[in-house]
Image: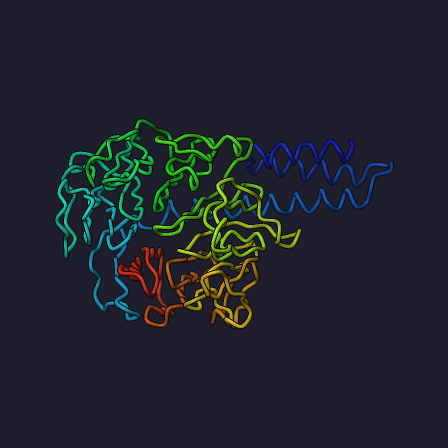
Length: 436
Protein backbone atom coordinates (compact mmCIF):
# COMPACT_ATOMS: atom_id res chain seq x y z
CA UNK A 1 0.00 0.00 0.00
CA UNK A 2 1.51 3.34 -1.04
CA UNK A 3 1.95 6.20 1.39
CA UNK A 4 0.57 8.56 -1.25
CA UNK A 5 -2.73 6.66 -1.22
CA UNK A 6 -3.01 7.11 2.55
CA UNK A 7 -2.36 10.82 2.18
CA UNK A 8 -5.23 10.99 -0.31
CA UNK A 9 -7.45 9.22 2.23
CA UNK A 10 -6.53 11.72 4.91
CA UNK A 11 -7.20 14.65 2.59
CA UNK A 12 -10.66 13.22 1.92
CA UNK A 13 -11.39 12.74 5.65
CA UNK A 14 -10.18 16.24 6.51
CA UNK A 15 -12.49 17.77 3.92
CA UNK A 16 -15.55 15.59 4.45
CA UNK A 17 -15.40 14.60 8.09
CA UNK A 18 -14.36 11.55 10.02
CA UNK A 19 -15.33 9.21 12.78
CA UNK A 20 -13.56 6.70 14.97
CA UNK A 21 -13.73 3.90 12.40
CA UNK A 22 -12.25 5.93 9.53
CA UNK A 23 -9.40 7.20 11.66
CA UNK A 24 -8.67 3.71 12.98
CA UNK A 25 -8.60 2.33 9.45
CA UNK A 26 -5.98 4.89 8.46
CA UNK A 27 -3.91 4.04 11.54
CA UNK A 28 -4.03 0.33 10.65
CA UNK A 29 -3.09 1.06 7.04
CA UNK A 30 -0.22 3.28 8.18
CA UNK A 31 1.17 0.49 10.36
CA UNK A 32 0.88 -1.91 7.43
CA UNK A 33 2.87 0.47 5.24
CA UNK A 34 5.56 0.67 7.90
CA UNK A 35 5.77 -3.12 8.13
CA UNK A 36 5.72 -3.78 4.40
CA UNK A 37 8.93 -4.30 2.52
CA UNK A 38 9.65 -1.59 0.06
CA UNK A 39 10.73 2.01 -0.09
CA UNK A 40 8.88 5.10 0.93
CA UNK A 41 9.75 8.69 1.58
CA UNK A 42 10.53 8.97 5.32
CA UNK A 43 9.52 12.64 5.38
CA UNK A 44 6.25 11.85 3.62
CA UNK A 45 5.54 9.04 6.07
CA UNK A 46 6.26 11.40 8.97
CA UNK A 47 3.73 13.85 7.54
CA UNK A 48 1.19 11.04 7.33
CA UNK A 49 1.63 10.12 10.99
CA UNK A 50 1.37 13.75 12.12
CA UNK A 51 -1.89 14.18 10.23
CA UNK A 52 -3.30 10.96 11.67
CA UNK A 53 -2.39 12.17 15.16
CA UNK A 54 -4.08 15.52 14.48
CA UNK A 55 -7.28 13.88 13.29
CA UNK A 56 -7.38 11.62 16.34
CA UNK A 57 -6.99 14.59 18.71
CA UNK A 58 -9.69 16.56 16.94
CA UNK A 59 -12.06 13.60 17.04
CA UNK A 60 -11.44 13.19 20.78
CA UNK A 61 -12.09 16.90 21.34
CA UNK A 62 -15.37 16.75 19.40
CA UNK A 63 -16.53 13.62 21.21
CA UNK A 64 -15.60 15.10 24.60
CA UNK A 65 -17.69 18.19 23.86
CA UNK A 66 -20.69 16.14 22.73
CA UNK A 67 -20.50 13.89 25.79
CA UNK A 68 -20.34 16.89 28.10
CA UNK A 69 -23.29 18.53 26.35
CA UNK A 70 -25.33 15.34 26.66
CA UNK A 71 -24.67 14.67 30.34
CA UNK A 72 -24.44 18.17 31.83
CA UNK A 73 -27.27 20.41 32.83
CA UNK A 74 -30.17 17.98 32.89
CA UNK A 75 -31.73 20.07 35.65
CA UNK A 76 -30.31 23.32 34.34
CA UNK A 77 -27.68 25.65 35.70
CA UNK A 78 -27.71 28.59 38.07
CA UNK A 79 -27.21 31.95 36.35
CA UNK A 80 -24.98 34.53 38.01
CA UNK A 81 -24.17 38.01 36.71
CA UNK A 82 -20.73 39.54 37.11
CA UNK A 83 -21.34 42.99 38.60
CA UNK A 84 -18.13 44.92 37.80
CA UNK A 85 -15.73 42.21 38.82
CA UNK A 86 -17.76 40.78 41.72
CA UNK A 87 -19.97 37.82 40.94
CA UNK A 88 -23.30 38.13 42.72
CA UNK A 89 -23.69 35.88 45.76
CA UNK A 90 -27.11 34.50 44.82
CA UNK A 91 -28.19 33.29 41.38
CA UNK A 92 -30.39 35.54 39.28
CA UNK A 93 -32.15 32.47 37.84
CA UNK A 94 -32.07 28.68 38.11
CA UNK A 95 -32.93 25.99 35.59
CA UNK A 96 -31.00 27.78 32.82
CA UNK A 97 -29.78 25.74 29.83
CA UNK A 98 -27.78 28.46 28.05
CA UNK A 99 -27.43 32.22 27.87
CA UNK A 100 -26.56 34.70 25.12
CA UNK A 101 -25.56 38.37 25.45
CA UNK A 102 -25.95 41.28 23.06
CA UNK A 103 -25.22 44.99 23.42
CA UNK A 104 -26.87 45.77 26.74
CA UNK A 105 -29.32 42.86 26.71
CA UNK A 106 -29.41 39.18 27.68
CA UNK A 107 -31.59 36.21 26.68
CA UNK A 108 -31.60 33.04 28.80
CA UNK A 109 -32.89 29.74 27.40
CA UNK A 110 -34.35 27.50 30.07
CA UNK A 111 -34.22 23.71 30.37
CA UNK A 112 -38.00 23.81 29.90
CA UNK A 113 -37.47 25.32 26.45
CA UNK A 114 -38.81 28.74 27.43
CA UNK A 115 -36.80 31.97 27.18
CA UNK A 116 -36.43 35.05 29.38
CA UNK A 117 -34.89 38.35 28.29
CA UNK A 118 -33.96 41.67 29.85
CA UNK A 119 -31.97 44.84 29.14
CA UNK A 120 -32.18 47.52 26.44
CA UNK A 121 -34.91 47.06 23.84
CA UNK A 122 -34.77 50.02 21.44
CA UNK A 123 -35.10 47.72 18.42
CA UNK A 124 -37.48 45.13 19.92
CA UNK A 125 -34.54 42.73 20.26
CA UNK A 126 -35.89 41.23 23.50
CA UNK A 127 -38.64 39.40 21.61
CA UNK A 128 -41.57 40.95 23.52
CA UNK A 129 -42.91 42.72 20.42
CA UNK A 130 -42.50 46.16 21.94
CA UNK A 131 -39.59 48.54 22.48
CA UNK A 132 -39.79 48.96 26.26
CA UNK A 133 -36.62 48.00 28.19
CA UNK A 134 -36.77 45.35 30.90
CA UNK A 135 -34.86 45.71 34.18
CA UNK A 136 -35.54 42.10 35.22
CA UNK A 137 -35.88 38.81 33.31
CA UNK A 138 -39.27 38.49 31.62
CA UNK A 139 -40.63 35.45 29.80
CA UNK A 140 -40.95 35.74 26.01
CA UNK A 141 -44.60 34.84 25.50
CA UNK A 142 -44.22 34.11 21.79
CA UNK A 143 -42.45 30.82 22.60
CA UNK A 144 -44.74 29.58 25.37
CA UNK A 145 -46.26 26.91 23.12
CA UNK A 146 -42.98 25.58 21.71
CA UNK A 147 -39.53 24.73 23.01
CA UNK A 148 -36.36 26.53 22.06
CA UNK A 149 -33.18 24.68 21.13
CA UNK A 150 -30.87 27.68 20.58
CA UNK A 151 -30.74 31.45 21.12
CA UNK A 152 -28.13 33.79 19.64
CA UNK A 153 -27.84 37.53 20.34
CA UNK A 154 -26.27 40.05 17.99
CA UNK A 155 -25.55 43.69 18.70
CA UNK A 156 -29.20 44.75 18.43
CA UNK A 157 -31.03 41.65 17.19
CA UNK A 158 -31.61 38.06 18.24
CA UNK A 159 -32.24 34.71 16.53
CA UNK A 160 -34.22 31.82 18.01
CA UNK A 161 -34.27 28.16 16.94
CA UNK A 162 -37.07 25.85 18.10
CA UNK A 163 -36.82 22.09 18.63
CA UNK A 164 -38.95 21.78 15.46
CA UNK A 165 -36.09 23.42 13.53
CA UNK A 166 -37.96 26.67 12.92
CA UNK A 167 -35.95 29.90 13.00
CA UNK A 168 -37.17 33.33 14.11
CA UNK A 169 -35.47 36.71 14.45
CA UNK A 170 -36.28 40.10 15.95
CA UNK A 171 -34.57 43.47 16.35
CA UNK A 172 -32.70 45.72 13.96
CA UNK A 173 -32.30 44.81 10.30
CA UNK A 174 -30.59 48.04 9.32
CA UNK A 175 -32.59 50.87 10.86
CA UNK A 176 -34.21 54.06 9.60
CA UNK A 177 -32.28 55.61 6.76
CA UNK A 178 -29.92 52.64 6.53
CA UNK A 179 -30.15 50.04 3.79
CA UNK A 180 -31.39 46.73 5.19
CA UNK A 181 -28.33 44.48 4.99
CA UNK A 182 -29.96 41.17 5.93
CA UNK A 183 -28.32 40.77 9.34
CA UNK A 184 -31.47 39.12 10.74
CA UNK A 185 -31.62 36.58 7.91
CA UNK A 186 -35.33 37.13 7.32
CA UNK A 187 -35.00 38.45 3.77
CA UNK A 188 -35.35 41.94 2.37
CA UNK A 189 -37.32 43.32 5.29
CA UNK A 190 -38.25 46.97 4.82
CA UNK A 191 -35.97 49.42 6.59
CA UNK A 192 -38.66 52.07 6.95
CA UNK A 193 -38.90 51.31 10.68
CA UNK A 194 -36.14 51.02 13.27
CA UNK A 195 -37.22 47.65 14.62
CA UNK A 196 -38.76 44.38 13.56
CA UNK A 197 -40.91 42.11 15.68
CA UNK A 198 -40.46 38.35 15.56
CA UNK A 199 -40.27 37.13 11.96
CA UNK A 200 -39.58 33.70 10.47
CA UNK A 201 -36.22 32.95 8.81
CA UNK A 202 -36.83 30.90 5.62
CA UNK A 203 -34.27 28.23 6.41
CA UNK A 204 -33.82 25.06 8.48
CA UNK A 205 -31.17 22.53 9.42
CA UNK A 206 -28.83 25.05 11.07
CA UNK A 207 -27.01 24.77 14.38
CA UNK A 208 -24.32 26.64 16.36
CA UNK A 209 -25.83 29.98 15.32
CA UNK A 210 -23.76 33.09 16.13
CA UNK A 211 -24.52 36.76 15.52
CA UNK A 212 -22.44 39.93 15.31
CA UNK A 213 -23.29 43.54 14.65
CA UNK A 214 -24.39 43.32 11.01
CA UNK A 215 -24.13 39.63 10.10
CA UNK A 216 -24.64 36.09 11.33
CA UNK A 217 -23.18 32.61 10.76
CA UNK A 218 -24.15 29.01 11.45
CA UNK A 219 -23.31 25.43 10.51
CA UNK A 220 -25.52 23.06 8.51
CA UNK A 221 -26.20 19.45 9.47
CA UNK A 222 -23.33 18.51 7.10
CA UNK A 223 -21.10 21.04 8.93
CA UNK A 224 -20.92 23.45 6.02
CA UNK A 225 -20.61 27.15 6.84
CA UNK A 226 -23.52 29.47 6.06
CA UNK A 227 -23.62 33.23 6.57
CA UNK A 228 -25.87 36.19 5.93
CA UNK A 229 -25.84 39.96 6.34
CA UNK A 230 -23.62 42.89 5.41
CA UNK A 231 -21.49 42.54 2.27
CA UNK A 232 -18.08 43.10 3.89
CA UNK A 233 -18.63 40.96 7.00
CA UNK A 234 -20.65 37.89 5.96
CA UNK A 235 -17.90 36.32 3.83
CA UNK A 236 -19.86 36.48 0.57
CA UNK A 237 -18.43 39.88 -0.49
CA UNK A 238 -22.03 41.00 -1.14
CA UNK A 239 -25.16 41.56 0.90
CA UNK A 240 -26.97 38.27 1.59
CA UNK A 241 -30.47 38.52 3.06
CA UNK A 242 -31.01 34.87 4.02
CA UNK A 243 -28.67 32.12 5.28
CA UNK A 244 -26.52 30.89 2.40
CA UNK A 245 -23.46 28.62 2.13
CA UNK A 246 -20.26 30.65 1.66
CA UNK A 247 -19.21 29.46 -1.80
CA UNK A 248 -15.47 29.94 -1.41
CA UNK A 249 -15.56 27.77 1.75
CA UNK A 250 -18.00 25.13 0.51
CA UNK A 251 -15.29 22.48 0.06
CA UNK A 252 -14.45 22.52 3.79
CA UNK A 253 -16.18 21.03 6.81
CA UNK A 254 -16.36 23.14 9.92
CA UNK A 255 -15.96 22.52 13.63
CA UNK A 256 -16.89 25.89 15.15
CA UNK A 257 -17.55 29.48 14.15
CA UNK A 258 -17.45 32.62 16.29
CA UNK A 259 -18.31 36.31 15.85
CA UNK A 260 -17.27 38.88 18.43
CA UNK A 261 -20.15 40.00 20.70
CA UNK A 262 -21.72 42.70 18.56
CA UNK A 263 -18.54 42.53 16.52
CA UNK A 264 -17.32 42.83 12.96
CA UNK A 265 -14.92 39.94 12.43
CA UNK A 266 -15.40 36.18 12.22
CA UNK A 267 -13.20 33.29 13.34
CA UNK A 268 -13.96 29.78 12.06
CA UNK A 269 -12.13 26.50 12.68
CA UNK A 270 -12.22 23.54 10.29
CA UNK A 271 -12.47 19.89 11.22
CA UNK A 272 -8.80 19.50 10.29
CA UNK A 273 -7.71 22.12 12.85
CA UNK A 274 -7.20 25.13 10.57
CA UNK A 275 -8.36 28.68 11.34
CA UNK A 276 -10.03 31.06 8.86
CA UNK A 277 -10.79 34.73 9.56
CA UNK A 278 -12.37 37.68 7.75
CA UNK A 279 -13.91 41.11 8.38
CA UNK A 280 -12.50 43.98 10.45
CA UNK A 281 -8.71 44.10 10.91
CA UNK A 282 -8.02 47.58 12.27
CA UNK A 283 -6.37 46.02 15.34
CA UNK A 284 -4.86 42.97 13.65
CA UNK A 285 -7.63 40.71 14.99
CA UNK A 286 -7.58 38.55 11.85
CA UNK A 287 -4.14 37.24 12.79
CA UNK A 288 -2.68 37.76 9.32
CA UNK A 289 0.42 39.56 10.62
CA UNK A 290 -0.79 43.05 9.70
CA UNK A 291 -2.48 45.87 11.60
CA UNK A 292 -5.05 47.93 9.71
CA UNK A 293 -4.37 51.54 8.79
CA UNK A 294 -6.97 54.31 8.87
CA UNK A 295 -8.30 53.00 5.57
CA UNK A 296 -8.36 49.63 3.81
CA UNK A 297 -8.67 47.66 7.05
CA UNK A 298 -11.67 45.50 6.15
CA UNK A 299 -11.12 42.13 4.46
CA UNK A 300 -14.42 40.68 3.18
CA UNK A 301 -12.91 37.48 1.74
CA UNK A 302 -12.16 34.63 4.21
CA UNK A 303 -8.55 33.42 4.35
CA UNK A 304 -6.65 30.82 6.35
CA UNK A 305 -4.41 32.03 9.19
CA UNK A 306 -0.89 30.85 8.38
CA UNK A 307 1.19 32.23 11.24
CA UNK A 308 0.77 29.28 13.61
CA UNK A 309 3.42 26.53 13.96
CA UNK A 310 2.95 23.76 11.41
CA UNK A 311 2.19 21.08 14.02
CA UNK A 312 -0.47 23.15 15.81
CA UNK A 313 -4.00 21.72 15.80
CA UNK A 314 -6.69 24.27 16.70
CA UNK A 315 -9.85 22.96 18.36
CA UNK A 316 -11.55 26.30 19.07
CA UNK A 317 -11.34 29.91 17.92
CA UNK A 318 -13.30 32.77 19.48
CA UNK A 319 -13.71 36.40 18.48
CA UNK A 320 -13.91 39.27 20.95
CA UNK A 321 -14.89 42.85 20.13
CA UNK A 322 -11.51 43.54 18.51
CA UNK A 323 -9.35 40.56 19.39
CA UNK A 324 -9.10 36.84 18.69
CA UNK A 325 -8.21 33.80 20.79
CA UNK A 326 -7.53 30.25 19.60
CA UNK A 327 -7.19 27.06 21.65
CA UNK A 328 -4.95 24.16 20.60
CA UNK A 329 -5.46 20.48 21.30
CA UNK A 330 -2.88 20.55 24.11
CA UNK A 331 -4.57 23.41 25.97
CA UNK A 332 -2.36 26.28 24.78
CA UNK A 333 -3.92 29.66 23.94
CA UNK A 334 -2.84 32.05 21.17
CA UNK A 335 -4.07 35.67 20.97
CA UNK A 336 -3.99 38.66 18.62
CA UNK A 337 -5.77 41.97 18.08
CA UNK A 338 -6.73 44.86 20.35
CA UNK A 339 -4.87 45.15 23.66
CA UNK A 340 -6.04 48.55 24.96
CA UNK A 341 -7.50 46.99 28.13
CA UNK A 342 -4.79 44.26 28.36
CA UNK A 343 -7.37 41.76 27.03
CA UNK A 344 -4.59 39.86 25.23
CA UNK A 345 -2.90 39.06 28.53
CA UNK A 346 0.47 40.34 27.30
CA UNK A 347 2.32 43.64 28.01
CA UNK A 348 1.44 46.61 25.83
CA UNK A 349 5.16 47.03 25.18
CA UNK A 350 5.00 43.86 23.06
CA UNK A 351 2.39 45.43 20.78
CA UNK A 352 2.44 47.85 17.88
CA UNK A 353 0.21 50.91 17.44
CA UNK A 354 -2.48 51.16 14.77
CA UNK A 355 -3.69 54.25 12.91
CA UNK A 356 -5.89 55.28 15.83
CA UNK A 357 -3.17 54.98 18.44
CA UNK A 358 -4.49 51.68 19.86
CA UNK A 359 -2.06 49.09 21.15
CA UNK A 360 -2.58 45.84 19.25
CA UNK A 361 -0.92 42.70 17.92
CA UNK A 362 -1.30 41.52 14.33
CA UNK A 363 -0.09 37.93 14.63
CA UNK A 364 -1.33 35.08 16.82
CA UNK A 365 1.04 34.83 19.77
CA UNK A 366 1.20 32.12 22.42
CA UNK A 367 -0.10 33.20 25.80
CA UNK A 368 2.02 32.02 28.72
CA UNK A 369 0.25 30.33 31.58
CA UNK A 370 1.98 32.68 34.02
CA UNK A 371 0.44 35.69 32.32
CA UNK A 372 -3.01 34.14 32.31
CA UNK A 373 -2.63 33.05 35.95
CA UNK A 374 -4.02 29.59 35.31
CA UNK A 375 -2.58 26.38 36.79
CA UNK A 376 -3.98 23.91 34.24
CA UNK A 377 -4.52 23.85 30.45
CA UNK A 378 -7.50 25.69 29.02
CA UNK A 379 -10.65 23.83 28.03
CA UNK A 380 -12.87 26.67 26.75
CA UNK A 381 -12.17 30.28 25.74
CA UNK A 382 -14.04 33.46 26.67
CA UNK A 383 -13.69 36.71 24.69
CA UNK A 384 -15.68 39.89 25.19
CA UNK A 385 -15.11 43.59 24.67
CA UNK A 386 -12.33 44.50 27.07
CA UNK A 387 -11.87 41.15 28.77
CA UNK A 388 -10.73 37.62 27.99
CA UNK A 389 -10.77 34.41 29.94
CA UNK A 390 -10.50 30.67 30.01
CA UNK A 391 -12.33 27.80 31.63
CA UNK A 392 -9.82 25.19 32.73
CA UNK A 393 -10.25 21.44 32.40
CA UNK A 394 -11.33 21.48 36.06
CA UNK A 395 -14.08 24.05 35.29
CA UNK A 396 -12.36 26.96 37.03
CA UNK A 397 -12.70 30.44 35.51
CA UNK A 398 -9.88 32.96 35.04
CA UNK A 399 -10.35 36.33 33.33
CA UNK A 400 -8.07 39.26 32.55
CA UNK A 401 -8.25 42.59 30.76
CA UNK A 402 -10.47 45.48 31.83
CA UNK A 403 -9.65 45.64 35.56
CA UNK A 404 -13.22 46.60 36.45
CA UNK A 405 -14.47 43.31 35.00
CA UNK A 406 -11.80 40.81 36.09
CA UNK A 407 -12.83 37.87 38.21
CA UNK A 408 -11.37 34.53 39.27
CA UNK A 409 -13.54 31.59 40.30
CA UNK A 410 -11.46 28.76 41.72
CA UNK A 411 -12.72 25.62 43.42
CA UNK A 412 -16.11 26.06 41.78
CA UNK A 413 -17.82 24.33 38.86
CA UNK A 414 -18.34 26.90 36.09
CA UNK A 415 -20.05 25.38 33.04
CA UNK A 416 -20.53 28.28 30.65
CA UNK A 417 -19.59 31.97 30.40
CA UNK A 418 -21.06 34.53 28.03
CA UNK A 419 -19.84 38.11 27.57
CA UNK A 420 -21.83 40.92 26.01
CA UNK A 421 -20.78 43.57 23.52
CA UNK A 422 -18.84 46.65 24.48
CA UNK A 423 -15.44 47.88 25.58
CA UNK A 424 -14.32 50.08 28.47
CA UNK A 425 -15.22 53.31 26.67
CA UNK A 426 -18.49 51.92 25.29
CA UNK A 427 -21.95 52.96 26.42
CA UNK A 428 -22.84 49.29 26.86
CA UNK A 429 -19.83 48.02 28.79
CA UNK A 430 -19.37 44.30 29.34
CA UNK A 431 -22.12 41.93 30.50
CA UNK A 432 -20.70 38.74 31.98
CA UNK A 433 -23.13 35.88 32.63
CA UNK A 434 -21.89 32.75 34.36
CA UNK A 435 -23.64 29.41 34.56
CA UNK A 436 -22.61 27.02 37.34
